[in-house]
Length: 197
Length: 122
Image (tube, rainbow over all chains, first blue to last red; front, top):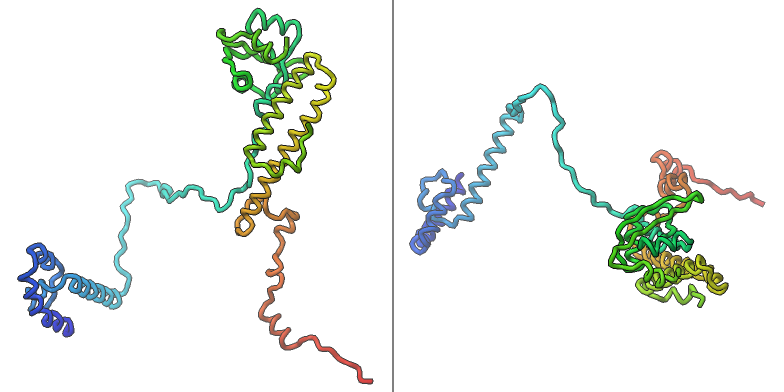
């Protein structure tokens, strides 16, 4: 305690000068910091706040450490108040995935693209009838294709709008798709363009 | 027009993909010709175009894999398909370093009783 008492005494004359110069806010701040146990309380209050606070903090810490050593660390534990008979698993931290390496270096490409999907158009007599009368085109498609996929593929390949798609699987295990074209497009024109007339 | 792999390897990915697209479109046309009874020349071309498509895809995949291997060469954590395949058992076996480790007892014995070589005096 003795060396600490000397310190504020040395700083007191300098501090008094500072006090006169310093703004009122600055004078109030050091006054708030923890009061030392020497008689020169007022002088010390005006001393530079940084050094003062540091010294006081260190002293507090030392006292607390001394206390725990002397007492031992078997203080009373804080027991939780349990309001329910059941013990529920506590919620812990769940981190999102952040892999260090991708498991696969390359992702699979889509093997069933628009070209694979639609194999070829049909040119049978009944298919020709459909083109003229019902504004539909008839395709043989991949067996794994479904109606929305067929719709998209036809749109992409021939730049046309599709009204609806009907599908069936032929006895020779191939899928046939009746693609009805939107009324503002002509199936006959498209058939000519493709080359099936 | 036969597509050669040697020519393909120099090209960029976008160019290759565009070429792939063109080839597939050509294949579509040829298949339609097949259905509508096309000329023999067209029908024969189907085979070459199919193989060209395969060639382009192969080159794309090969260059992709090659670049990935270069990228991961110095890294500790590689994707599993870029690691050594060997066999499942070999991958789980002890590493050469782990095999070489000796216990203190063994090291002591080695130091105290090294292999001696004797010579027979003539």
